[in-house]
Length: 450
Ligand code: GLN
Image (cartoon, rainbow, N blue to C red; front, side):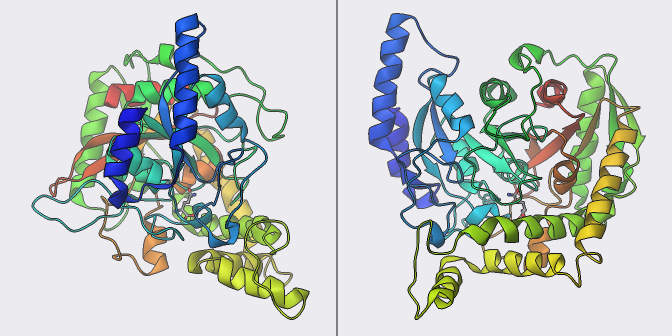
């Protein structure tokens, strides 16, 4: 723990943490030492972790990287972090992120952008770590923690994992509790680990998975021993390559690593076949209607009365307006506007209701594909990490989510594993998408790729 606290201090330039919690960390580490000495160690005893600042942590500032949550110190702890502490883990601090988890580059944080520890060959220009769990990803990649928690609503674990050469898994919707995760789009998001190896991801997922009576969308199904499922043996397994994921403008080297990934899976004994997910092209528009719609509703609670920031006005309405106008950043305001629009009486049928129908069709495509294959292999992202400021146009940023949002819309488990380096020397990720509640199968395919 001391070594990591020292490394964090030396690497503040990356801006990976919003809040460092050294006193708490040393206290937890001392308690871990005592349990280890007493022979009562948990499965994560003494492991120093970074926690995305979207998780409510009792007594520790929790901001969601938003100005509107200024000074918000929860009186309760999220269920998944409670599970981590129960298993003996240590919290080093709260990781930086895009405001309310909206973004794909970590440039939308009130606390400033996170810097990717990776650089292009022979270049010193700063690159983004991806988002929204960019602080978690940078902290893992730069050895500022053993592992981290992220959240994934449309790719926010997998895309930053791909951009930083780390492993990230989004479990099945309902696998982990969302209690105490500050809500962005409740029907899409899940908690998940970001780690250096697939084995670490399996161990951490095992610790946070499971039913929680505080979250009625968490599902009471048994949690297997994920680490024990890692054999790397894929004999008898079929892996699908979705032909619709060969999108226009995808760099040839991404296609090449995808091909190599398929070869590695064949070498592990799998049969690789083509599958069709015909509604894939509707996934991005459907996501960028459903996610803002839910965000506009979830973020209605920030009114200057109950949480954080209050900017006074001459009456109540003006106080609301001033607080929300100053408290929310540009991207968050954009999402609230889009979400309110697509839910409004005149446009609900044209946008929200159609997006929900597309969501069903996208989920049906996966169901059909999983009648013949055990898992699907795809790239995680259509590009490697990009330069800060490069995607100032929100649409170009949204397009980077083309391969990740489908799993959220369908509620399926999906993981990003480092594939190799681009010609410029940057990490690229391969994505494994699995059947509902088959995280064990997904992790084992990832293990064979690693
Ligand atoms: N980049 C996507 C978005 O901006 C995904 C975010 C997420 O998964 N939290 O909505």
